Amino acid sequence: MKICGIVAEYNPFHNGHKYQIEQTKKLTNCDTVIAVMSGNFIQRGLPALFDKWARARMAIENGVDIVIELPTCYATSSAEFFAHGAVGIMDALNCVDILSFGNKYNDIEVLKRIANVLHSEPEEYKKLLQRELKKGTSYPIARSNALKNFLKKEIDSKILENILLDSNNILGIEYLKALLTYDSPIEPCAIERIGGDYNSTNIIDNICSATGIREMLEKNTTEKLPDVMPEKSFKILSDEIISGKVPMNISNFEKEILYQLRKLSTSELSEISDVTEGLENVLKKCIAEGFEITDLIEQIKTKRYTKTRVQRILIHTLLGIKKSFLQEQKETPQYARILAFSKNGKKVIPELVKKSRIPIVTSISKFLKTATPSQKEMLELDIMATNIYTLGYQIPTFRKMNLDYTMPMQDEK
Image (cartoon, rainbow, N blue to C red; front, top):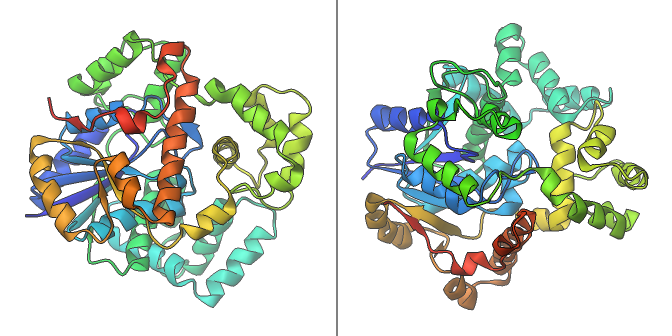
C-alpha cells in the first residue's frame, strides 16, 4: 500500500485542489490520499468560510480518502508552525510514503536547498537575517532578503525572488524544512500549480484560487462558481448557504474580539501568541477608538506587522492562545483526529491505528477518558474553537455547543 499525504485548508475546495489530487495519484501511483486539513479557523487568521465537516465532505467527495484535522494551535499559526504541525502528524502516522504539495516553481531541488538553509541556519545567514530585521521590516521580508543575499552565488537572484514571493512556494519550503526537522522518511512530491497565483482573483481555464472564490461570495457574484468548483463541492457549498450558514468572515466575530481586547490587560495581551515588541500597547490604543474590526486591522498593520499577522493575533486573542501554550506544543502533535473518510479510507483506518505513534481519534468522548493532560489541552482548544465558531452564525439555532462530540465522521456518499 502506498499512501500520499496532502496539507490543505480547502476553503473552499475548488478545481485546482481536485487537479492536485488527480496529478498526485497519477504521478505517485498511490493507493490512498490522506489530507491534513485546518479546522474552523485558518492560517491567515480568519474563520473558515464553512465549518470543518462541510469542507471535509468536499474533500472526500473529490478523491481524498481520509481527512485529519490539523489542531487549532497549528492551523492558526505562522507558515512555519502550520507546516510543522501538519508534517508532524503525517510523520507520526508512520505509514505515509509521500507528501504532495502545490507550487509555482518546478525545480524541487532549489526548494530543498532553501529549506536546508532555514533548517540548519548557518551563522552567516543568521547575521544577514538580524541585519534585515533591524531595518524594521516584517519577518517574512527580512527572511526573504537574507536568503537572497546568502544564496546569491548559488541561485539566480530573480529566480529566488520569484520563488519567495509566492505563498505556495513558501509553504512548500516549510514542508521540506519540517521533513528535515523530523528526519522523516516521507518523500516530497511537488505538483506544479496551474491557473492564477494563490491570491489571484482571475479565472484561468476554469481554475480560480480560493481567494478569488471567497471574493465572489463576499460580493455575491457567484454565477461563475459552478465553473471553478467540482460539481459535488459546489453542491455542498450551495446547501450550506441555502440552510442559512452564510459564509463566515472575521466581522462575524467582531464583538467577541473587541470584548476580549477591552477585557484583557496590557500585560495579558502581551502573553497572546504573535504579540511582540510592545504591540500590546498598540492594540490597547487602537481598541479605545471604537474601530470596526476591519478598520482596526488596517490601523494596526505596518511595514513590520503584516495584515495576516494582525489577523492571527486577533484570532489568537479570540481563542485565548498564548505563547506559552504554543511553546509546549512545539515538539510534535498529540493525536490525529479523523473528520471524514471514503470507502477506501475506511479500510485504511485500522492500518493507521496499528502503525501510528500518536493516537488515532475517532471518538472525542472515548479519547478524553484516557488522554494525557497535554493531549487534553490540545483537543480542548479544538473543541472550544468550534464552540466559538458557531457563535458567528446569524441564525440562533446553528449556535449549538459541543458539535465535536455529536457530529459524526463524514463518509463517502
